[in-house]
Structure formats: C-alpha cells, structure tokens
Length: 324
Image (cartoon, rainbow, N blue to C red; front, side, top):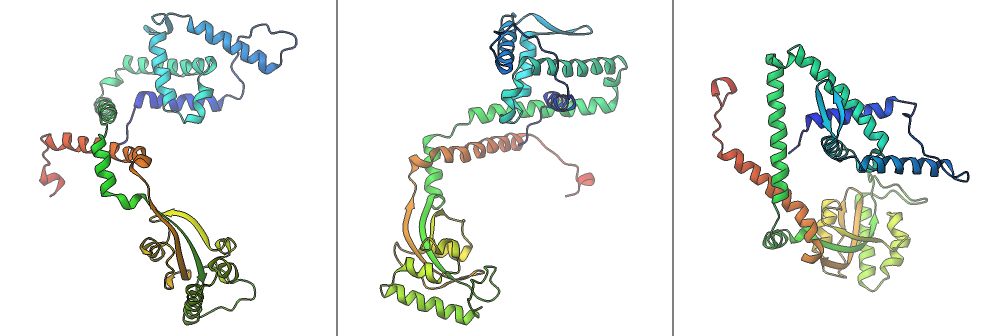
C-alpha cells in the first residue's frame, strides 16, 4: 500500500527545488575562529554555534509567523522531521542543518501565504477544492492507519517457523561446477580455433567428457581445457554457491536434484550442453534466515489486516453504472 502525505510531500518537493535553484548559498552567521583555523573549521564552528543557539530556544516559542498564523519551534521541528524522513537516506545528513531549516521555513511560509490568500478568495469552498481535500484527508488518515498496523503487526515465532517449514526450498543452496559445450545458435561465443558444433556433435562431445569424468578424469582440468564457459572454466568450472531460481530452469532443476558429487547426464539449455557436478547441497537454518522471513511475513500480515478491514465494510457497487 502506498502512503501519501500531501502536505509534507509538497514541502519536500518545494524544499528540494529551493535547494537546486539557488546557485548562491544563503548568508550564514559566522563566529570568530583562530587565525590558524581552516575555512572548513570555521564553517563547522559556525554551524555548531548556530545549532546550539537553536537548541536553547523553548519548544513553545513562536519561531515563524505568516499573517495571523503562528508556528512554534515544536510544531516546526515536527514538520521538519516529517519532511526529512521522506528524503533519501544519503541526503538526510546534509538537510539537518540551520541553513536547511531556514530554507524549509521560507518554503513553508510561501505555501502558507498562498493558502491564506486562497481561503480569502474562498477557493477552499469550491466543489472542486472540497472534493480534492476530502480525498487527500482520506489518503492521509488511511496511510497513518496502515503505518500503525504495520508497527503493531509482529510475526510470532510460530509464524516464522510455519513460513520456514512451508518454504524450505527457498533457503536451499548448492555449490556446483560445470562444463559447457556450446552448439550452433548458442549465444555463447566460439573460442578461438574452435569448430562450430552441430547439436548432435555437441551432445556427443558432452557425453564423452562425462564418461571421462566418471572413469576418474579430473573435472577441473577438463573444464579448463574444454568448457566453452571460459569464465567458470578458468576456475575449474566452479559457479560458486547459488539459490533456487538463479540459473536457467533446466540447469536449476538438475543442480537441485543431483546428489553431492554426482555427475549429471548432459543437460541442454539455450547455451549448449552442461555437465554438472554439485559439490555441496545445504539448507540454511531457521536462525540464519528468521530476520529475512520477518521482512516477508510482516508486510503480508499487515496487508491481510487491510483486506479484513475492507471486507467487513459494507460496500455496494451500482452495476448499472460500473457493470458486473
């Protein structure tokens, strides 16, 4: 569910625009610095002094007045934190400064001044305005309700265990290596001096390599010499560890079906024929993935709560208008 905060959204957009449109920094109050201090040290000292002065202002002090509307420090700080919380994490540090607060205050003052003039002209009394304000109010309080539901919805240990037991294959991993023999039409490029094999020739070569490995041949050495997957071939055919769904379906199915150290029959994909050997097959333990499960189960449970609220509401659609 997407949460919409119209008021802070407008401020956030205005704030971001104000930061980018001004090429000249706003004036700042500086404090004397030692003769040996660098410009960066002086700027840091000035910012620290300004922040300390702001912190000493009582929360109920009126810090901004627009017409007859007054905003206290506490109210402004709440608005400021709301705006900052919606900014990308990498921008929040730079935004939390006296200069940023002043810039936001200027944008807020402009917004409030326009709103006051709109009310004086009774624009807020028009049918269009009333419809939009009612919709936005619904969006706001519905969003706040969803936030509350999300915070209060905490999966129990039993919920986590049930999800783990029902989705164990999601936590399976294998470590495998392979030898690829490409055929005509493969997206894998030909190696220098290599013949472009037909499908039948590629399959025959793959079967021959498998027979050599089963008879005791060195898988890694054969992969280095023969595999058309030159990336893994240089590493003895190793593909490392991977989970289900990471490989193309035929390869994936074979890898998760093979026993450890078993050598597969040639497995055909769009790339060619693969000889696969799984060197390790494991399933992550519940304790290792419980946080990941909670991240999946929590939102799902919250969404179910939303659906329950919707389902218990008395909702009727006029079929003559909406259709069946």
